[in-house]
Image 1: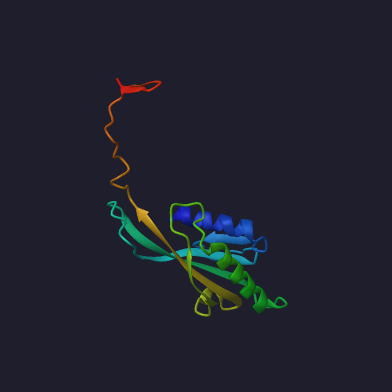
Image 2 (image 1 turned 120 degrees about the horizontal axis):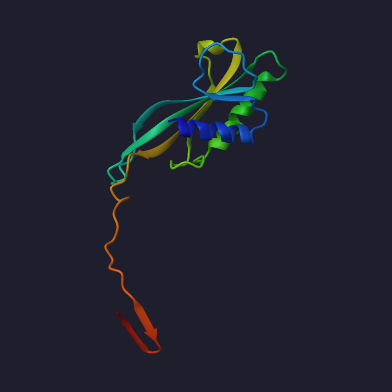
Length: 158
């Protein structure tokens, strides 16, 4: 869901000034200022039923931080950036109506062929969310309008 990834992207760029580019779902061959972070939701799994008539889903988020392997201390830099991203995500709801992030892994990503000539680390986390309208949102108590008069010890409703 775009609103979640936009919120994550904005927070990463705000909190980690070393990150020069952060985008969701890269569109193909393009030159990007690095370090760069690629975001995506890889899948959704069933969440805990909130008993509201809404669909409960757990969104599984991935962030890949990519840098040039030829810069000095590249391996340490990319690991440090991966940990910083995980720290930003940890228990963060990014201002959205989703559960706080639960970090599941931070690891070297050697299986993404687009990044073979670079160093790439993968950060994975999840958020639970509820999709659709709650059956409770439109319920209003039917309270008749009435006046209350308070006169010293004499209390009564009119």
